[in-house]
Image (cartoon, rainbow, N blue to C red; front, top):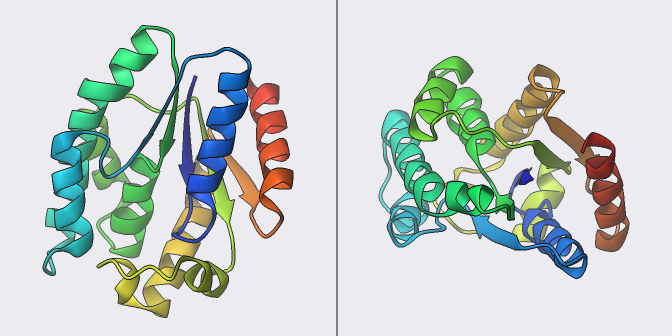
Length: 197
């Protein structure tokens, strides 16, 4: 099973990814928990460029995310899936579709094509989209990376972008309202993933 978690910073993605990892591991399953951008030595260096580096064009940003993702799939995700492990990833290609494809105006189809080439067409079995009011997410995260410093207007565009993706890919994206206690969310996520498997 390949499950990804999406949503803005402060939506609880990392917490829910870890809770799902722990639940699956408790069942005796091998679980690989990873993140994007990152997950590999090259990916972590690209992460630093993307989140702490200088301003860059939208296509440079999209290409760097895709480069990190290509290495991640090749080195971590595919080998884990091939040996029968479950993979849980904190962000994957839907982040690029939301942030660069829609919020930055590059187009979902163009960014999707770039990423499908970079990942050999690998899509998650399910994507858990945690939705929370953008102002609440910003207050929770306190993030200061390059993308989060873009302000309320950009955060609102990203929120709208994720909601659009959920309507475009309903067979893969599970929408979860994330303004509840983490344990309650985790139970709902596990139940909904079981229904899909």
